[in-house]
Length: 88
Image: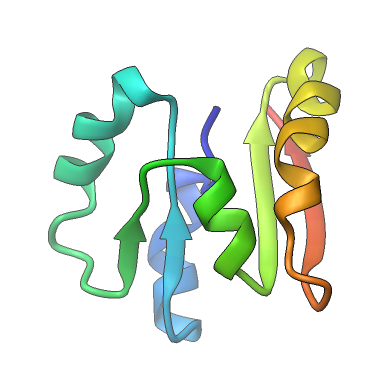
């Protein structure tokens, strides 16, 4: 799972104050390294943390996994958050 699409991260960081992101635990170090030069991108330890503090959420996951991801992290969303699922 990845809560930010790499292809849109550069565009998003130009237009947003901050981008919160995470990935599967085994891919977290790779994500941290990949975005170390993007000061507006904050890599978090879990989707729960990203969902809790984000106003706009993009779940970029395989279509077969979207239900499980939204079920797991959806309850953590801020009440003001917007949800945009994307399928990869």
